[in-house]
Image: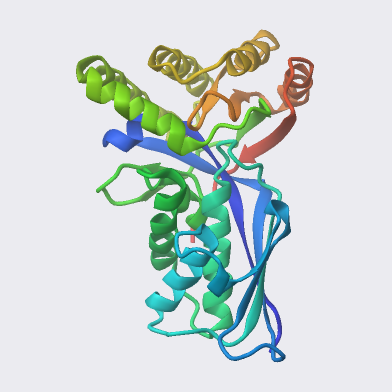
Length: 318
């Protein structure tokens, strides 16, 4: 049996982080320059049902049965078996690798889950559809993040820009014009669950101002959807500036993020903001494509550990 490989891209949140957890809309886009990869290979020398999991990026090489059931990789394998109504898989080796930075707001956990679900279900001869892949990855996201919004698994599964609101039908966005983004990594790890948990505690203690912040961020996401569909990139820049100021007010920015945001805007970005949970991780800037290299250089000089230039292009109609 040949090895089965599946990959999944990273993601970046354009608008709506934190507010999306409280029912407001958000917009996210795939980042194709970084990817998670899962390779499933038959292992005929192992006993029936034995699964060896290798994840060299995080120092894991262990048999499935030796991992805790709540380990994300073990939980993903079990979720696939349950979805296919199987008790076990043929003896195999699952190797996970990724170029997506961990705890940086680029969806590393969800990308690994999506790649693994697709590779394993294909190995078992019953590839799962996108809706099921996203649903299974969402269940694993609960292990990573506690109360996930669902946006990571959605945008990564469909690999298209999405307008997402919990409980509402998914909307795949079609930008009227290419949108060039420059992503700067602060190099500061920022576990999503911890930051989301802090915001939840603050909201519970004093809900009114936080509800107002969430509503204002949600309104920005609605305006951004219209701007994306109209190809108004400069308008998106101003919306990013507004969104970042609200996230600062929420207390989820950091000196490192603010420094990178300011550096991008000083050299001509139309706007910039933190992306993801905040207090570390990544920021994004939107600019004319010709300016992207200069912005990347400015971010590097301002202390970015890694810079990615990505372009969201209109998807051709089917």
